[in-house]
Image (tube, rainbow, N blue to C red; front, side, top):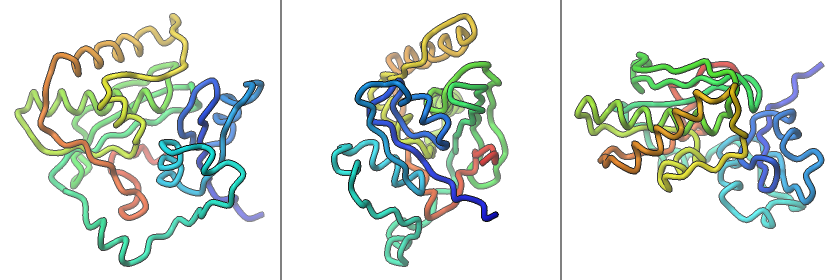
Length: 213
């Protein structure tokens, strides 16, 4: 039997909104939710672009779902800035066991790692990874850029606001304490590091990826 191709799922309206990398996690957000709005895509980049767009432009319409880039698109994107920090998160289930890390983009050498946290979401992990990276670089006096493959986390950092439907409880108390710490850090610190989107379609998986796909 041929292996089915991986899909990404956008949830615009559900228990938790965002981009999910498997149907089970998407289903958990939309099952029983009145007025749920969601759609599948063939790659993460298209899914994240759709998530920040208008759901009416995608639901019920034949949207181009191509994973390839033209030579012109590749040339326009160019190469990554190798002197940089790359961050990523991994979650077994959503919510599920969460961890995140930051690595040197060129060598892959790990600079920091946190987790596992028993109950978290990918979006929270991606957010924490970015804030940890910013604080780490500021402590080092470094102005190099940071790469993330999550537009959601980048928006949360930019807006200094976390939008998650994950409920606080004793299991995830430590995780939410870190989230509050991260938000306080953003509100009380400035930084000159650029936060850049990792172009997975052009460059492959981000160097900080945990390799569990």
